[in-house]
Image (tube, rainbow, N blue to C red):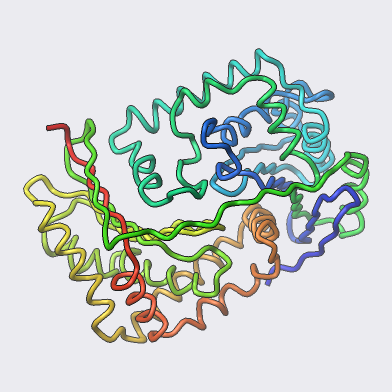
Length: 412
């Protein structure tokens, strides 16, 4: 169990401290509740762009990285559909350095036109590298657009196109910063060897005077997929066909989430999973095959995907996958098989919590979805899933819900 205390400052900043007296380091993790789903459809990619811009310097720290490195620390960040997360790891005695840097860029980011232009070029180059010049790199552009009619998971975190990133003007960036990068939209999670009161005093010192405001973002309801199946084929500079099957599923806070997660593990996680054992290893149809869930806060997707070997037809590939999906609906799932994937899921969480950095990041994440205490309940949630639950979800996914199919093929 990860013990922690929480406090909310008058400006709205949520603070979490986890004390570990056996460490000599500290983790300062700042999570902002803003991701690609907060963007407007005509200017996507700005949340990811802003992740880069937050390292461009602030009023009292023209260079974010240099003071942290001088204090013996390191840092990084990531953006996804729902959040943007910044984390700093450094010797505990130098925790003030990380708190100062995070507070200064929250209060007074020094965003110049030159910095904006430089980072736009960096992100556009990243877009070119990971989406346009990488085989299958734009798959998610097609798949998310196919699965979401209006909900802002309709585009990937990196954005719809480089033109959207290029279109960001200085006033757009500052407006985004003013709206989302302020205490009322942030969670500060700290893991350290210090007493709780000591850390809370430090947080008050560095963040208490920053003016905050409430952020309200209304997301449209996800419109249900219509029709039994929509299948689309796209073409790119690739050498083999790739198939995606995407089924609508619940969001992260739904009580059935764990059933979907374990079902995906039964099908596609590990060497003994059904897709790997029954198809990949034995039938010679695919070079890769897997199943997974997106795990987003809003409406999610359950995805099965595989890359075909060149002598495999799409009909053969599809039939093999559906045989296994239907088997999950028609046949009894052994308790031993389910317990095995439960053990893997729980072991993975326990192993992850060995890292002080992961503990700080996970506390911030669970707080961002409004349930910090869930971090210590996940093993129970997974253990509570029964074989009957798995079959019920399989029937719902593979027999009742409409789904989307994407075939990514080589250029003819």
